[in-house]
Length: 365
Image (cartoon, rainbow, N blue to C red; front, side, top):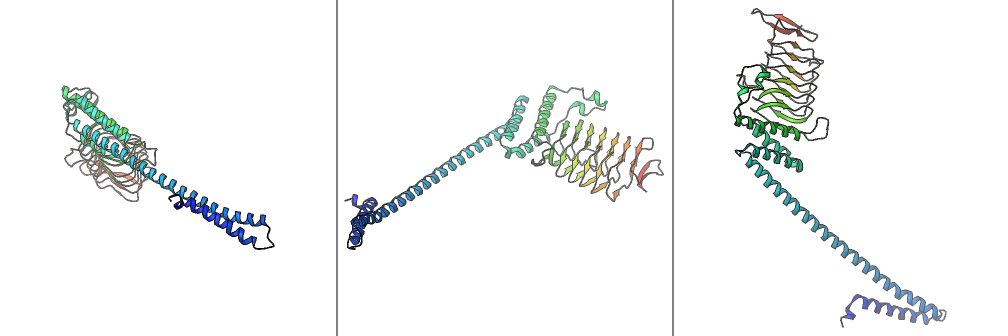
């Protein structure tokens, strides 16, 4: 009984009925031969079989499509589960590494720093977070005997501190190198621009040369030995602002040759204790050196400042080269002072004016 309920049985039954019906109907016509009647009836019956074959093929196709859709959904679900597992493992690695940053052993802290950097390289979504953690570590208060000495720089750099100080210094230098290593090269225009918040940090031999950054905060920071920003591209804002008490100071050589500041470049209140070299740097956004002090030589030759430039109460106490390659229409030069006994190179349209107290300032002609 079940056989006669199947579509195949009904198809063959309908085909047989058409064969007999059409063939019998044509045989009643004297003009139609028996062979023609059987052939036409066979074609009618075969059409039913062909239609069934087409329906069966379409059904198989839909079943296969549903199977593939289910397989795709299963694969997507497995991929989501695998991604969730990777994220969970990454979160656990991150949490463990951050916890180990407070370990008493310096080698454990170094290992934690490398673990964080490795996580950022394998999971780019963590890069900014890892940079924030590394910068947070560098913002921790730190003192070293050579930072407090008034000896010449080369002599001061050879001074050694207590073993704990030396070990912590090596950990911090490792953190600095890892921060730089996570930043993309300046030449990669399409690469992301990460932010660094180093407000109040104590840094030594800080080298961001030829790197691409977003925002950089170095407010109240103390940079020792030497600092290099040569060839660096700042796509965001850069703040080197020092406090009015002078707690933010650049005590080492400051090299910033061929850099590009696309946003704000704020050096207000900053004290440059050694050579400051800005040769061929571009300041495309608002730029200020208000109340800044250059205690040694400064080179601004070839600098292009196209938005605005503020030299309000800036003091140049060493050899001074201010031969800018491009200047905005208006430059703030109020009480901008230089040393008369030093060699001072000025751009066209600027001149020196002696004050009553014997000091010399720069004014526009």
